[in-house]
Length: 110
Image: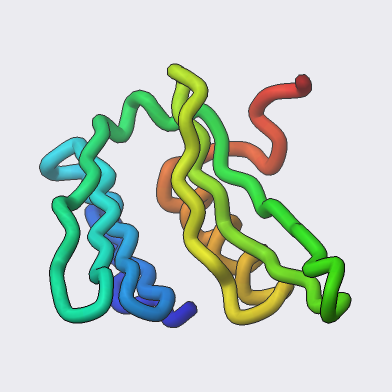
């Protein structure tokens, strides 16, 4: 996933046709998705509602391929996934988002 923009007030990460933007000035996180040729309605949430940023891994049982996603977890329990190109990419993007939000590596122990 390329990081499109990484400044002190805004970070934007793109994965395929999905873009995750965190903006400190607006105080929002926005997930924009495109399905086929149509733009889906963007999902928005306050930055203050983000509880954790982690990496989720899953293995396709048929092919054995591992898929990794950067997960943005909110205080209410829902989560947004942004698929990474590989494991290192997902970890790098999670670290960039944590740094942007001034979060520690593991803010909560479950």
